[in-house]
Image (cartoon, rainbow, N blue to C red; front, side, top):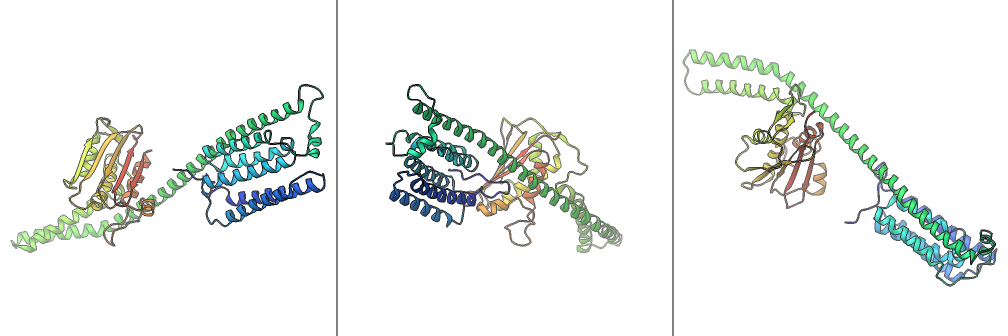
Length: 427
């Protein structure tokens, strides 16, 4: 797959409009300069060929400017190669290799080093070096003015000193072009990587802020619901005892006991809200065997879950066991809901240089690119209303990233979804 142009700090492609302005300046400058060389200095510039070249050049500029999106690397490389070839022809008509302005094509090499991937940038550099080298092979044209303007560089004696000087210029051009492509390209890649890291840091900070808001909401809900649930629990126990003393058989007593059980369950859920929100709270890290972690996560999820522990899995890893198990449970539960029964959900546990890798695969309908891009956003869900809040993947990703791990999604429509959780040891 051909990579596109690099991107700037804001994430927008670099700089398409700037390249169009540069091409406009080059076209106008070459046209005016060649006309001045012909009429003011007596250069024998072939006017018909020059007008045809400028016309083709301008037509390519008009077509390029109509593009509503930034072209990919091949198109940008083609435009630069066209410009370099056109400039080489103009140099050929105005003094050949003795034209003192041949170095101007280095501007394109600097731009290629910033905009294009390395392979395409170096191809532009090789094209520019070949175009400059061809000026020595093409039949010379009359260029007295250019010759005189450059002849003072030649030493007064030696075997064909001007030829040696010009060939040295070509070698110097190649060395300068290689240096530009190498150093400018390296700096551009370093800036691009830094911008990517900054974007990731901003995304992590935003996700942490959302998580903090969610944890605050959960704590508030637990506090507000605790008192009425406690009152219901007391009243239900009193009702149960009264019915038992009065020896009331049948459904009333069963209903009272059910209320007591459900209130206890609600209290347990409220007590786990902070953990379910991705905050380990008072939970201490512990050395946990991967088998125990997966067993706690898939408990009560049914026999459709198929677990495989690879020999490369570490014997144990230090993490927050309950929080990590909850994160993995959310992922497995999502996979079970996505895959139609009785399709299995496979859980592969294996080692990873970071620590522990757990891969969850389902045979569901998969996700399109737009859904895949938003799958880990909070409160994003494709389920019908009332069948999920869209927090499972968001919380799972937050949990693993808080300890230095990461979560990766891979999905295509019709080919299921694979979720890879990498847990890093808690230090």
